[in-house]
Amino acid sequence: MNASIGTILADLDSLASEGDFRRKFARTFADLGFNTYTYAALNTEDIRGADADMLPSLVYLSNLQPVWIAHYLESGYAHVDPIVRECAEIRLPVVWNEKYRANTRTPDQAHMMDDAWENGIQRGFTVPVHGPGGELGIFSLNSDQSDREFMKFMNLLKFDVQTICTYFHDAVQRAFHVVKEERAPIPLTDRETEILKWTAVGKTAWEIGAILKISERTVNFHIQNVMEKFGVHNKTHAAAKAVNMGLISR
Image (tube, rainbow, N blue to C red; front, side, top):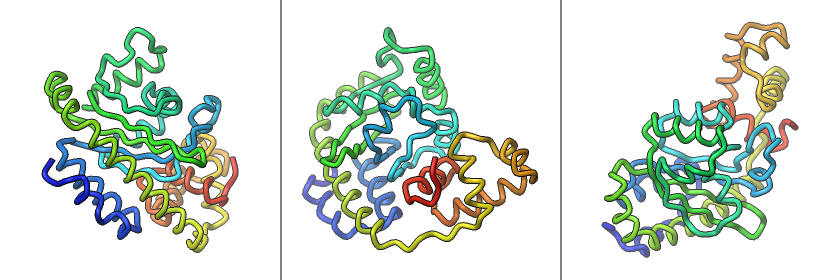
């Protein structure tokens, strides 16, 4: 590591916005030697609820390609991702590659892992952080090293990385708990609310347009406006935030 754990964690109390945390995470994990990161704060019951239409993350931060993030969410991979689902049950980190649980995967899990491989997500280190209120922080850190190099790398750093992730998750929870209490309601128009409700149950823009008797282009226009209001990069995350804020119900 280029910096001590103490130095890395020293400024956490000064971070307040999603942008602050995005920059901190990207810089820290890059310095540690990872190519990309993803952080999601969920509730363990949401992960266990296999029949849920979506996993409403409380916070979702990542520097993966937006195209892959949207594809992952819209394909419902969060419901079948074997690493995410295992994180609901375990407390220790997972080192994984494309062969992870290859002999016990369901067809859906195998498809998801193959898709990730083809999109450059081939090995990583995932850290679950369980909180007292049932919340679960998941850090998934990816590398483009060879499997052999990555195992050597993780043997040297895994305990430091787990410690850093634990403190990062706690900082996010504290920061966004305060923000959630103080944040003014985000104003949504009746049409935006209507479209978000259908988005939350998995309808496509074309299907929503047919239901509401408006064009697909108009649906996408309203979805884009909502995404800008919420400061998110895809419609699924926008719908999840709306659910969590009580603006719509599922």
